[in-house]
Length: 102
Image (cartoon, rainbow, N blue to C red; front, side, top):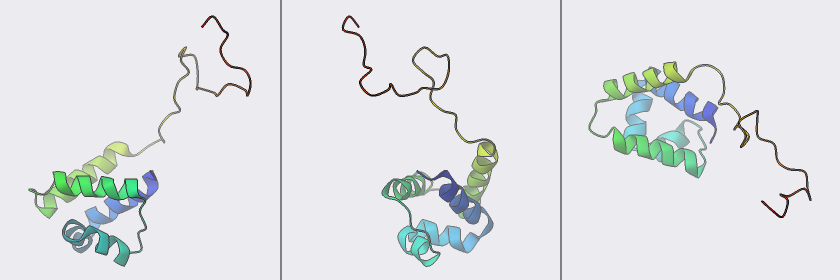
């Protein structure tokens, strides 16, 4: 999932009420009209947010999105840790599997 695309969508939805309204009423048509080409996973995220906020007004949804953007600003997500917890996980070199006793 592309964080920058979802952040761009949320940012636009907080600043452009007509876009937010269209996104809530006809998400696929609104996204296409504004040049967004989402992956299936990204579209599913948008549709899930739409479903979860169906009972809220546009102003409340815009405020929630703005708060989420503020909370998510900063560095990108970290890399997964190794099983021993001593550093970033790295794949084993080819042909170097676990020993037979493990």
